[in-house]
Image 1 (cartoon, rainbow, N blue to C red):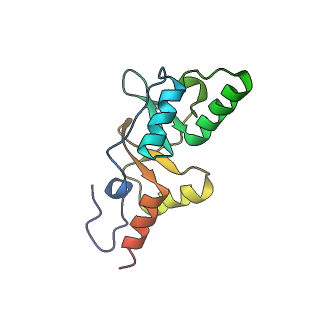
Image 2 (cartoon, one colour):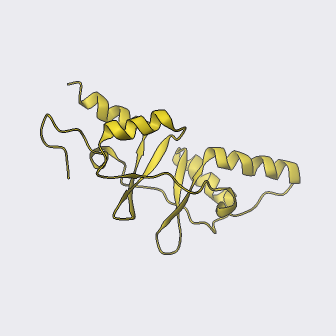
Length: 137
């Protein structure tokens, strides 16, 4: 499903990250936050026990948890309490131009990428920019 010809638009599948860090809804928020910090990523998909995408946890969500911990003097809670949901996703077969338009329309820094209802990757703003730059020769 790759864009092969010069006239074809590049596809999300051609530029998405496939090696994803994922979290679970029952994971402690402080552990999840440390994973994001240690891996130097701004967010990660949250998958249920069957592997279905049910949310995304971002550093912004972790800031809410940190503020709650400061206010209540108690650090804790589970990812499912702080994760963002429902999740806006894109399809692996979508062209990068359409995906880039979504980045302009929405405040998200990344979109989980689905294929046949299954999480297969993630497209970031950097990935989209790289895809567009590749078209400039």
